Image (cartoon, rainbow, N blue to C red):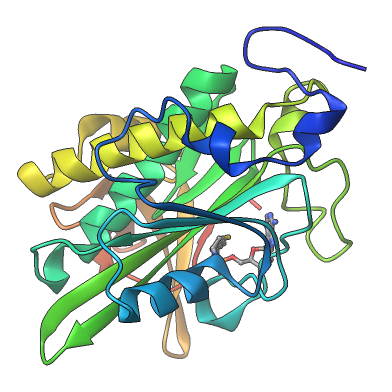
Amino acid sequence: MTRTNKNHTLSESENIMNKTELEKNLKTDYLGKPLIYTDCVDSTNNEIKRLAQKGYPTGTTVIAEKQTSGKGRLGRVWNSPVGTGLWFSFLLRPHTDFSQISGITLAAGLGVCRAVRSFTGLDAEIKWPNDIIIGNKKICGILVETAAETDKLKYAVVGIGINVNTRVFPDEIKEKATSLIIENKYSAINRTKLFKEILFHTEKCIDDYLKNPVIPNDYKQLCATLGRNISVRRGKNVINGIASDISENGDLIATDENHNKILINSGEVTVQGIY
Ligand code: BT5
């Protein structure tokens, strides 16, 4: 069976992607060049690190149908079953220092969010720093890892996982995860086209940030965290506040119960109303 409308076509043969189609009409300067497509890998982030050690250039991208050890932050597991999602990573060798890594991370999230919105018309938003959500559930996680040489940034790996045509989630995540097909009233999304759209928007956001390292206004407009009650763990304490802004270097700014400004640059932020 083939269902058709502009961006939402899924024939049986499209359940598996292929390298030729993935590379065709890629509108990027460097992302996806070269592109390595594989059936199965431990983690596309790990594979990029192996290729980085071999000297592969900036933009090198690995995409897999399935990951056996897909990972999130802090050693968490990223559920990456075959044939339903987009699991990919790319290598960046930016001529910047570590201070710009959070900006690059936010730029990648903005790129994915813009791509999902323009391609599907769904109201995707960003949960700071770079989860993509629809409603109050997560459709995408991004893991940025870096390698240093003395105190200089050697390279960064940006790993993106998106639930595209996933209909069922394991029990552990079914309350907090959703997918594009679920949000799209069960009309399937063409993963190959979406992948190319994401590379295009993400490259543009990263380049814009590297040229002019400020957090763009539309990041803030799309950031579902702003204006909400949040809590963050600091050692043994939990601080509660309202998220109000993003600082120049990408930190979340919140106002606590005593009207003090707090800057949050890492760690787990719980946002009221979002998974
Ligand atoms: C992230 O971590 O959200 C970053 C995920 C990055 C995955 C990509 S896939 C391609 C590349 N290769 C990799 O090995 N990783 C990257 P974090 O914020 O720590 O969230 C992880 C948590 O999200 C887990 O503990 C689960 O609760 C939940 N989770 C796991 N799989 C999920 C999924 N498919 N959809 C939504 N939530 C999920």
